Length: 451
Image (spheres, rainbow, N blue to C red):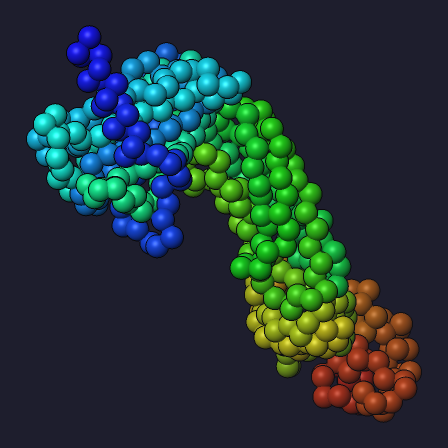
């Protein structure tokens, strides 16, 4: 009978320390914390057991405490509990009271509700305990896959004053997860060259690599500027889902951008290395075209005394001034490289010289190339090929024979210069920019020859 009276008296004393209930977070910025440790419990399997400590840190003069710990009972069942060693470390007697310990507190939650206080059987004040340590330990069993927050609430820490003062403190909840939790962004699909002034449709592919259905947000940015955030709702394990974003490029300057899609980590996720996906794109159309490759003459006498000019005509169909490289090739032989610049919508020419001294009779391909710009996607018109004939001096019409038809062409262009209306470049056999007697002599010298 005496033992029962003592226990009732201790319980009443404990309540006098702890009531009224409050949340345990002071108005100041306390350095004392009450936390679930370890804070994160990952990689658990159904049937596993694990324990957490409720730990007080950086406390001064602690004589009594209380907390409620809520957990998701569909995932976890609490199997045992015990008082931690911290309050006992001062050497005084303690009274540890399990107020409620059930997996069925309500339809969704289990509850561990404990309180504890130092007491002096002989009466009188008892000094509190300073420092850091465990005030209680709870063991759980995993009963299904999923996640549960281990949530602290209605916490009280009291000192040894009479009446006691509540010690301000902050709370740190815990988390427990059974099954692998891992979401990812695996792709961004959009043309890498986007016309400025358009609204680009961007498809972002998300993936659930884990074992649990997940709901999470995905944010798309151009570099540091947010474009849009969308939610993925209940993505089942192993599935993918495509989100459609739109990007208005009207306010965006022409240039290179990183499109970055980021999936907000879900509770319990440890591997966040695949939560981001980046694609470099360019705003502002980039499109070069070679519109013509023009030798000023199509029939070139073998061992022509000077090189033949080849004009490569270029067009910038893009939205910005571009500086780029232009090349001319004869077959597999590079003739030259030039750098040129064109304004948006502008055109121009690059002039190359073809040395014919080492060539034999025959047709030769000449290919002009505008080297594609970074992010340029329409490149099928970046090159153009034309052909020239290396032939007998006097073969002005390019039929590989020097005959009356060549003489007629020369006669029609006789005494002309490049600026004249009757000028025929092929009739200028010696390449001195005049069709005259010297050209006629060369034609007559080779008259009747063919290859």
